[in-house]
Structures are given as C-alpha cells and as structure tokens.
Image 1 (cartoon, helix red, strand yellow):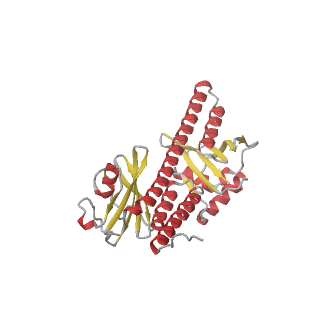
Image 2 (cartoon, rainbow, N blue to C red):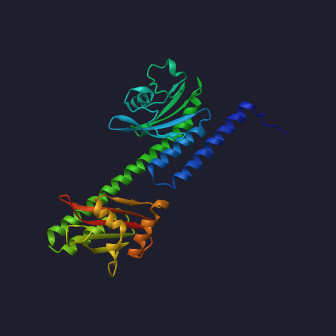
Image 3 (cartoon, helix red, strand yellow):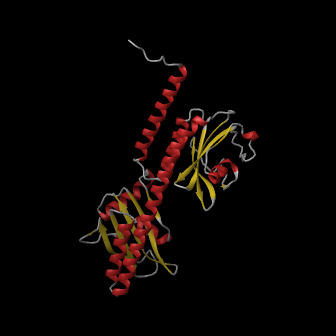
Length: 317
C-alpha cells in the first residue's frame, strides 16, 4: 500500500495558518452581520487583522475623505487619531499605497523615506489598499515593533480583510443614500401638503408621519406650545402621535408634566435618551406619559426665529 508524502513541520505550519485564516474570516463575517454600525464593523476588522497576521502588534484602517486619509479604526482599541496622522495621497506609507493602489511592505521603517514617524515605535509595516473596482477607498495597515515582521505571504489574508472593509464602507454609503432619499421624499410630501392646503392639522400630520418614516421610529410625537411665551406657563398640545404609521386614537395627556419634553422646550437643545442606566428615569417618564414602552428616544426642539414653538420626539420600544 502506497503512503502519501510525509508532512513536514513547514507544511503543518502552513496548514495551521490557513485554518486560522479561514476561522477568522468566517467568524468576522458572522459578527459583521450582527451590526449595522460602520465604526463597529471597522473595529472588528482591525482586531481580526491582529489575529490573521500573527506577527502584527497594531492595525489601523484609514478611509479616504476629500483627498486625505483619515484614521477611523485601530487595534488594540484606542483613539485612532492619537498615533495615526491624517495623510495626503502620496504622503506616508499609507498615502503611497492609496496613490499607487498596491500593497507595500516595509521591513525597516528607519530606512523608509516615506514613513511618517508619529512616535508609535513601529519598525515594520504592511499596508494594503481598500479597493472597489478601480477606486481606492482607504488602506488597512498592520505594524510591529520588530524589524522584518511581515512577508509577502501576509498580503493575501490582509487583502481578504481589506475586501471585508470595502463591503462595510459600501453598505454604509448605500444606507446613507437611502436615508437621504427618504429625507427627500419627506420634504417633497411636506412641500406638496403646504402647496395644496392651508389646513395646519394636515401639514403637521404629513410632517410627523415623515419623521416617523425617515427615522424608522415606532412612535412619533409632535408637540406645539400654546399660550404665553414663558415655557413654564404655556400649555402643550400633542397635534399628532403616530405608532408604526397608525395614529393614536387620542393624544396622550399630562404633557406639561413630562420632564424630558419640558427640558427640550426650555433649553432649545436636542435630547437623546439611550438604553444607558443614567437615562432610565427620563425614559420611564416618557413611557408613563405616552403609555408605551421606551427603549431609546430622540427629542428635538422646533425653533423659528430663535423662538421654540414645540418639539418632535421619536421613540423606539
């Protein structure tokens, strides 16, 4: 019986590395489907770079914004702008990679004229471009304090991660376009209502429905101030409340007693309530007044000629 060729330590090492790369890319793909936040997605990719390139000690993602490379994610977790300078195309190693649209491996940064020393202590770099067809979107780089830490063999897995970053950036771009399209549709509907009717209730109805649709809110509320200019003495009227596109049969009572709404009206500043424990009291108060659960909320003042005329609120349960 014939035996296959005996495996060598080098072959086993290569197989283990390929397995690690496959596991890392699969795990990353699964985790990226669980987030719609671009910053979180890029952070996941930066951390995956440290795993997929074992000799890497630091990873940074730059995106191209108005002709400059701007650091937007780093691993280990830190403020990516702290040690990663913004660079023009062609300046710095990352700038060269973006301008030349090809990977660059720097075995010794002290011998590389294009390296911009920001005090990071890095002695070797590997940088790959983020490419969508022929358009460069940014760069993904890994660095090490050791000289000659990277080889051309590291380009392949790092380029695979760069492709994931391109997908995340394109999804974010399409989401932004869809959001702008929704905002435009809302403005068009409001303009049509303004031109076709003098009925304030109709105009406010279109406005709050547009807010609800654009922000994909489960509950939307539009409140107008009536009475004296003093916010403490004025009365509040809920002109329209929408719950997933269906108007409430009756507006909620006791708006004057709602602290978050009063805060927005008196300060003229927007108020965002997250699921953080520090916002729990305000969320509970909104929930009590509207008689709906409140997980997160955004309240913004309606200001005309420096006078607060009311507030709009969107709530997700």
